Length: 171
Image 1: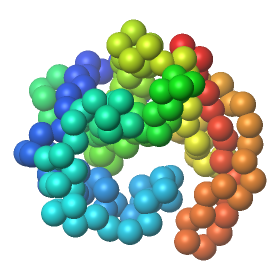
Image 2 (image 1 turned 135 degrees about the vertical axis):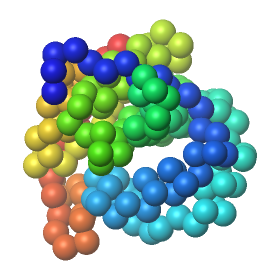
Image 3 (image 1 turned 180 degrees about the vertical axis):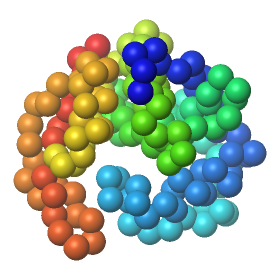
Image 4 (image 1 turned 30 degrees about the vertical axis):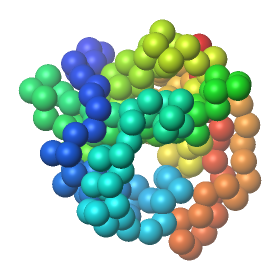
């Protein structure tokens, strides 16, 4: 990765994103870093796209597609578990395999951090990262997140438990 970050755009999920969303949500390699443990049908994902209000207060989450400078989808970013009383939310990001290690995750985090602060007026974002996932930890640290706690046996990959780091960004 070079020091210059790629240009990215964030946009709402459209019906045309169904196949991409289906591929990301059903990638079992991603399940090990998320709470997902069952496949999603196209129908369930289509229903989500059709019924999401894209209002963080109504949905308690915001999901956005990440596009590169050519408007090709390179991943998805989620602001989930929105807590309006305490003005905090969890963040999740998945970059499609062929676009990884090219700066898209860091560029996305920088943009989403600004969005969370200036548009949503959140006080903090947080993320749980597998303690062994050094690349993710590094990307979150580069975007301003700090490690605040280690959670024992927090993540289960189907075979064994892994410790997770709770990382926070105060906006």
